[in-house]
Image 1 (cartoon, rainbow, N blue to C red):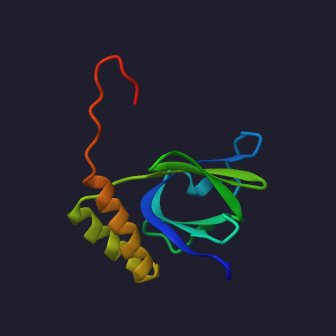
Image 2 (cartoon, rainbow, N blue to C red):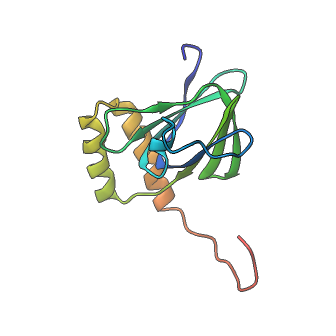
Length: 141
């Protein structure tokens, strides 16, 4: 990861991880244990527009690191990282000030670098304070 640098950090969920043919991984696959958990998402990029995602589940001393891939965005807070063999779907969430202090302590206790925690919490607080667009009846988001 030497030619990659941090380009984005957030709090969110690893919603799912599938094979590139959209087939789910079996329950005993190592990736499956990370799905459905909240944690810290760190996206590292390089000059070739390739990314690597690192996901640190809340309160755990382990992390998932993808191989090189490309992002596909569905919205500003929902995206896939598509690698040679897998598709990782992430969903970012907003957190309140009290929640962010609690998460900061939790991530520090598990060894996540403080700069990474601060960057992720800044994004999460921004999401929390971003107004939801008004949707009129009959319109889609």
